[in-house]
Length: 483
Image (cartoon, one colour):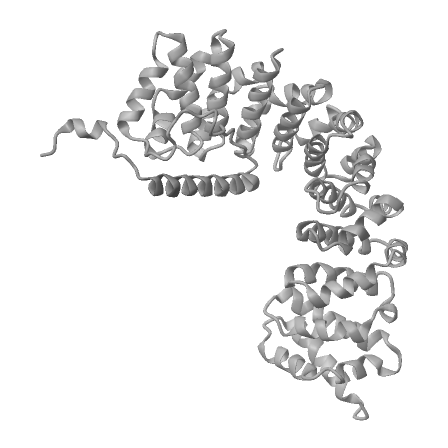
């Protein structure tokens, strides 16, 4: 039996081992950060210079014992150092550390620190809590136990404490509807909205907007209260104050995204009336198309454009909005921006004939035709929606470059995506119905294999409506044998 003391010593790694572990660690962190982007949570990570822990080593039970001893030490400096160590370990918690948080004394220790008056220890405890709330659901549930104390610290006069407390609340809010309701009951919404309204610190504003965005997620039992608290007006005010700070504008724009997502007509009207949307358009008009700031701005515009015809027209009648949309679609520097802009355009062209005319005069048709013919299917689908809207809502089938577009829509009919199939069939139907002198049928006859694609669809589709429409198109195609 090997001597027990050997487990206290770590094997000395080679240089290649250290490099491999570091690369693996960095890869895991990047993956974690991507996951957090979708979860709406943000861990606070220490830089290599800040961290004194050996992150490439496994977290063992003996390490837990040493950590717990440090947290419970009677020496203040040892406790602070242990909290700093814990916050770093929580970036990627081991199984043992998760168990300590979920069922051990971890939260009791953190709660005691938060109740004390040691600012440095409180900051480290908040840092730990931020990463606990940013972790798996069972860990995040434990973090909620400290919510009342954290809400109080969100109103602290210390910028560092205030910022870290709000960050922790933002991660808690991302956990789900129940967590948000609990935070609302603890007063977190009022506290964070007040910070958004009053802070002059850019870092605190960004963190408060992050937290407010998560609190504004739906489903929500208190969403309407955000408008009662005049959040749109607060956002507009801070957009004016921080118009030269792109990071602040981006975070304020994300608040607008959640305020406008699936919101009522009155709520969208309130957002428009506040001036926040117009200010975002002005900022975007001066930004590079590849800027990440444009994503939340364009997404907000898409939410508004998906509202009533009057709300859509309020955007379409803004020359800066039209220019921004065209510029975003024309650019190939950012696929994400292009896709978001196409989504907005599909909503605008689904509005009124007047709005369609505005976009056609701006020159979008040639760009849409290019995208339908050259991009990946997901981007092509967004462009196809707008082209069909232009034809149907704007009564402009004859104005489209139909000979150029027809082969691409026939390709849609032959693909596996049911929505694209329906779009392709709808386009063929428009050609047959709206082009004079059977020009639509003639265009189809000049596309090699096009009628075979339609006939094959009749045989394989399970959609009765599609089968009926395509059968009628085929009958119409063969009605005039002079084609």
